[in-house]
Length: 635
Image (cartoon, rainbow, N blue to C red; front, side, top):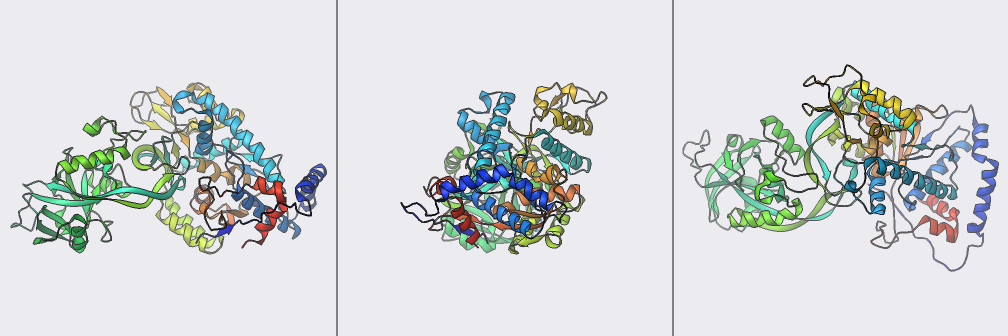
């Protein structure tokens, strides 16, 4: 359950009697002149440490009310632990790379990736992030939060970037990192792969269709010598008609019974248990049962692609459901995770007709150039004309959207760099640490994150963006193989420490190469630089390596991570996974989560609803202590 905190502040034209908006800045000025944070730390030196590690906000705008809630909670805990006699340092940090900063800056510049060079954009992004670090720092200080504000950690700082590269290198050495062609969440507006933590589920309207796939007349089912399939069809259901272009198989469950029926719309095959529901959907009142067929006997059955693009075959899969659809699952290994693994099992072709902008390429035939979402209507018209569309309707359902541009995303098979979650029993170790080594507050957080880790796919680490830490991969100019070389990563890390990660783009490739390096595939020695950057969640996820482990006044593991409940999908996982892989232990002893701020009617705050309350406005009218009192009095 997500906990929600309602912000329903009083509205009055009369100033507060304490006159906090005027008095508080005087207190803050006095504390700053005293250097009160340093004095507190000196007094507590040598005492038992209690370190709350700050999850870094993105440096891409003013703070919002959620930031105020989060930072005030942290400040209360740090001050409370200090008064209890602990040495409780507070080191604030900022997440400065990746899509959040890049997306916002491109919006302000009014440009896209094709209109500015990468190095020029990176310089602007660096300045942009630092600008908002300064702005947010003053806004947090105005909240009365004590901390080492003059010495924060920044993910764009060269020493932090060096730690990112070194952490990545350890994972490469241990065999966790691989390059693979797999379906990933893909935002064609931002033109990049997305991790699970970068996907939000929102309401979306999709076409729900039932389609006939024509079985080859010559095919006979083993064990059913008297059953002729001439003029027969498999029936599938999908809400993504555009993925039909990449169809290569239809999956059935080996243990289901399938009904072979005669109807006015042709002889159809579908799951017996779903017969009544499906026939009602496609408008068939009468049918004659010709035969009941075992699912496992349908394996290998051949059909013609509904749009005539290729031949396909029936395969077996345990994930086929009796809960929805027809009991036959349209399978396109390039557009789905389960489809992909079925494709590996049966050595199916991974057809990928969609480019990085979400448009069909030449392999899609007559649909070439159409955006996938626009193509749905055209594909339905084509199927209708061919007499293969049994039914269509619109349904509204939860659908993945990009966390930044808020546009629907697609599943698209691309070559990416992945962290293998099951290598060396990593998933098992993470789950064990969640259960035994970490205290979760509230306790429900343990089961929530356990379920997420238990089901999560491999971590897609590469991004097709301009702003971030580059993955120092090499591309062979002879055979086009992309690979990682330990010495190249180490040379890059050394240069990053002094120059920052821009050196990958500004320096000649020879500055990173050992003289004897050869391509592992073709043994040639002509290379180009890889162009992908690391997932921004990896940047913040290895903060325990870059900050807790490096700074003597802190320590690993820390006492507490405190963030919003959405970070079960985000920072908690992106911290746990590398910590367990690199050090064999979690980076934190406890996790405390808070919910989201909602308005007086319980609605999520958003600019479109006009119900956003700015902490700056509240402070200006009532003072920061009113906000702090609200936070302290919330459950």
